[in-house]
Amino acid sequence: MVPRHGEDWAHAVLRDRIGMTRATLERDGAGTYVGSSYLWAPPRDLARFGLLLLADGCWGAERILPPGWVAWSTEVEPALARESIDRDDGDVQGRQFWLHRPVPAIGQGLPWEGVPDDAFAALGHWKQAITVIPSRSLVIVRVADDRDGTFTHAEFLRRTLAAVGP
Image 1 (cartoon, one colour):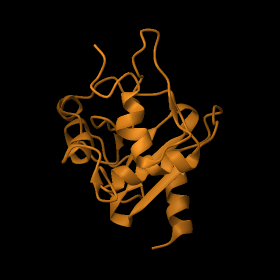
Image 2 (tube, rainbow, N blue to C red):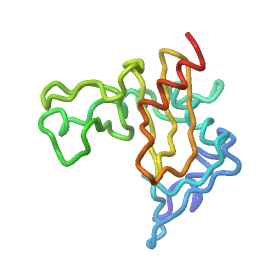
Image 3 (cartoon, helix red, strand yellow):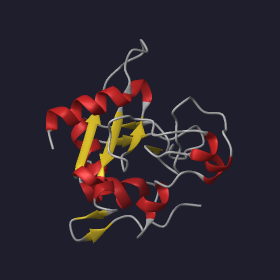
């Protein structure tokens, strides 16, 4: 079944509407868009997506994402709130994003020390990231290739926040 907006619905519904003109979202072998990964985009286009999230799914006067979707997607995943599932230490999963939230039921504190509690991020391959911090009206984009294991997202955010200032 072809989605209502046609074969290129991801472009028509999201990418083109917020001006992510150089972004490419790849498909899997069956032709389905891979929403969890395989988005190739320059930092400016990634920042546009972060700004959409920061504005609760609105782009200018136009609502792009359903009302409440950003809040819903940045809640702690209920399965994680009940028990510690297969995850790396410090990982707090939302429904679409990695969260800076405590999960007391599994003994998880805030994962990114020194970062505002409302931060959330789309964390990508080799430590690429789009981090949104609503309380600071801030979107932080990082593109990199850190396979050596020395990079930490928390330290990067602390240093960026120190550079940006209050």
